[in-house]
Length: 277
Image (tube, rainbow, N blue to C red; front, side, top):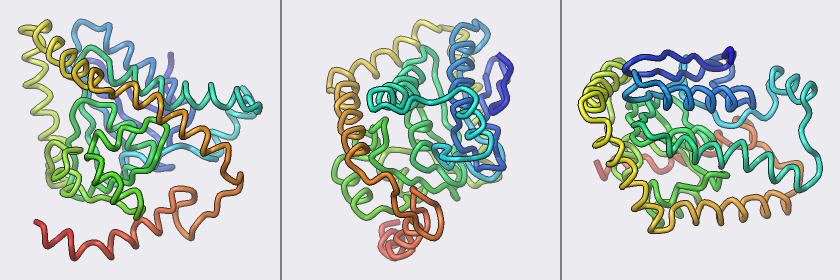
């Protein structure tokens, strides 16, 4: 497969870079298909010891592509199902089933997040094993199709942030367990790659040990209900989406994600956030 919306760089530390900076790395169908192919390639490549997912440009990802010219042209050329069950299957395949495949890739994965990480961006990051973020990263959750958020930050924190609809800062995300480490923007890539090389060295020495660690941790989560709850949450998501008015009110910035509101609510919450540091 030739990649148009991502860059894939194989090697000891494989790089998968979202490459639509003009659209803040909005997640087109083409991007999702290319990511699926690249993760599969990395999983099968014996030279790869770890996969690093990042975004080109100023932001990690602004979430699902809801109407860029390339996405609309692709929809016109290849079509999308319009019946209810067709929409159910398409959305499930493109946002939940693929994310679970990436979560279960048998090699370690890291999300390197900077700038916006909105809705679908959260899905991408959450499907990785580890998240390192720059200090300027801003995370905006919602009841998205791959609803890992209560697992990512805990149920009470998830309710607090989702009810309010606001961005989480990198340091807040770190405090609540979504993010593993936070770095200055100019040091993020250096630190991520240094860590990735250490893990890749461990993989080269003993891949069975590293793979077993990942399998066992994921299995523990699944025994606690992780995948089963994601399945149930997707059903709830789709029912709610079908009940919702087709024309969702959009605010002055950020469309359906209402990033303008989320930024305003973050500003209102900042005094409290700063008092907890």
